[in-house]
Length: 193
Image (cartoon, rainbow, N blue to C red; front, side):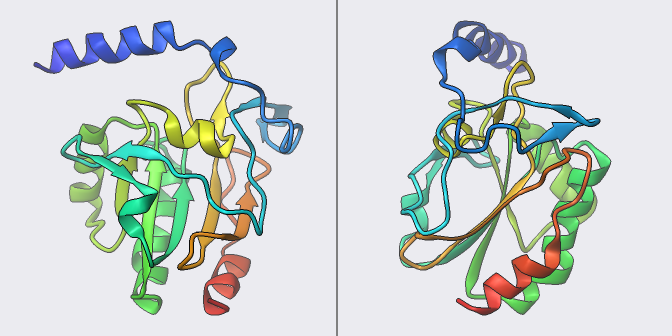
């Protein structure tokens, strides 16, 4: 079963090339990896616009959309892969130090990791206050928010805060892929909701 799924997923990525997704011109030149600029694909978003809907999967491969959080403010922490040190630190920080302060805000971490890997990570690291969601199946979130790193198939590091009407009230595109977000303005934005 896992082999079949891996084959299907690899086939999907092979048929969905970077040429199929437009370049994110809104955020062009804003992100580097080891000091080299990376190209982001998809439709960039900005503060004050209505957040685009997206379709991702949870740890059971069940589809989850933005509409599933209707009427709720949301923090979306975006990481390239939970299996890396900085992504792990970022996710644990929101789970351990932020979620408890803001129980009325839905906390999501979205990455391109497979749901199996996300589930394993959450169990090993006691992630229980933040929901991990995977963009590995359709890459819909990455495309709709302009976060797909060209030629890597991963999402760039970012943080978004949506109010309860799902307007984007805060956006932080982390300028160097290997760095953590600046948490202070994130907390300030959440306090203002």
